[in-house]
Image (cartoon, rainbow, N blue to C red; front, side):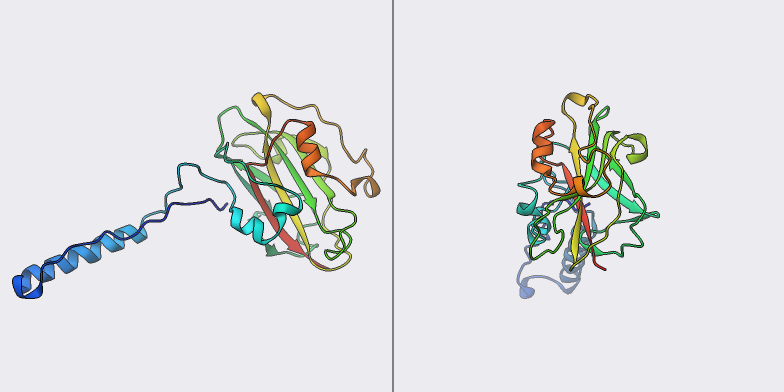
Length: 226
């Protein structure tokens, strides 16, 4: 997952004027400057003190914020990795409905020990991204996923339904919510078991508010079309 990171600049080395420094000294200083610069840019980029599990800029660019979310919370260090057939979803990549037909494995990496999480997947764009009158279409809910675990260890509330975009390119958004007080949730399926109609017009915001989930702590998504 992407995280906001602090930017680092190469340290500045103050060099004396060429006339005042011997050739050997100039060579030594130049080599030192190069080594410092290389060590700065080759070391891992450290996250800022307030680490985000998702890149807010990319979510805003994809209009996931504000179409279905207001923000991503920085309250948890947890990350969400969604894998189809062992391959992790990259933010905004184009996948085929055939490749994403079966339920993925969604992994929770990091987060407080003993924490529990709820995973949602929705499509903000049905039936047509230009006129999404059925926003959002509910695709998946899994609750009580343990920190460090994955969706197979949680409670499937709404069974996964793969993409079937009728018009245009749709976004399929996976959201990770931290459950309050590290307590399990008792959730009923909002779709009522209906595979189609009752999945329409779902609201992530209303669902999160109803269960005191707050804002998601991590988000990823892929795009798909016919």
